[in-house]
Image 1 (cartoon, rainbow, N blue to C red):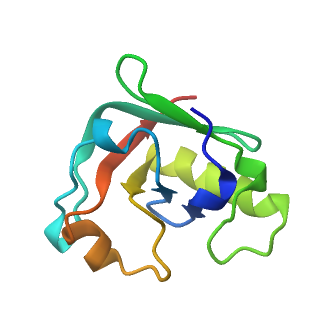
Image 2 (spheres, rainbow, N blue to C red; image 1 turned 90 degrees about the vertical axis):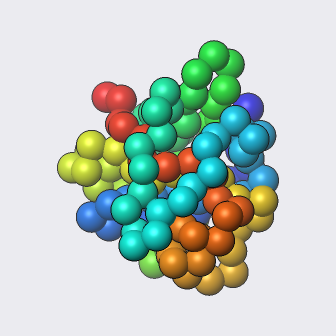
Length: 128
C-alpha cells in the first residue's frame, strides 16, 4: 500500500524514526509499550531506507511504501539532503523506530507516543 507522504514524518537522529499516520498496516503491528524509552524490536518487520522510496515490510502481504523524497523530514530544510541524512542515520543505527498512529501528532512528545497506547510498531531492522 502506498502511504501519502503528508501522512508521514521522518525523524533523523541517533535512533531515527518514521511516524505513519493512518497507515493501512496499523492493525498488523504490535502495540508499543516502551516506558523509559526502550522501544522493543518489531519482530518480522523491516525497513528499507532509500532516497526516493522507503519500504516498511512485514510478514505475509503486510507492508507499505512511502514516497520518501516527497515526505517531510523533522527539522529539515525541504532539501533532498534531509532524506539522505535520514537514510544515513538508519544505516548507522541498523534500523529505525517505526510508529504507526491513527494520525500524526501536532508535536513530538516521545513519552506520550511510547506510552499512550495508540502507537503500534517498534524498532525495525534495516535491509540493505
